Image (cartoon, rainbow, N blue to C red; front, side, top):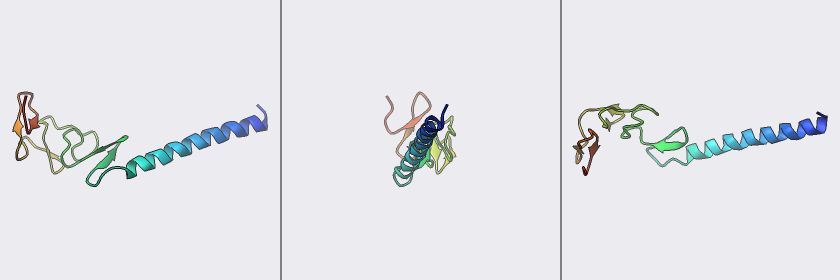
Length: 90
């Protein structure tokens, strides 16, 4: 491989890495207020039973209140047959 070929490949890799970092920074900044970035998506760490208190922490009860797994359902929701709290059960 000659120097010119090496330089082109290096520039392509460096540019790709820079673009990926810029995209990640943009995605982190794109979350609405009250949500945090969790591996490419936004999550409410205070209420999301799949990201309760931190990304990826799943509440078996299906209820996340103030960032902690809780067996009680939030106000206005009932525990449905599948064990998950919802405003309307099927």
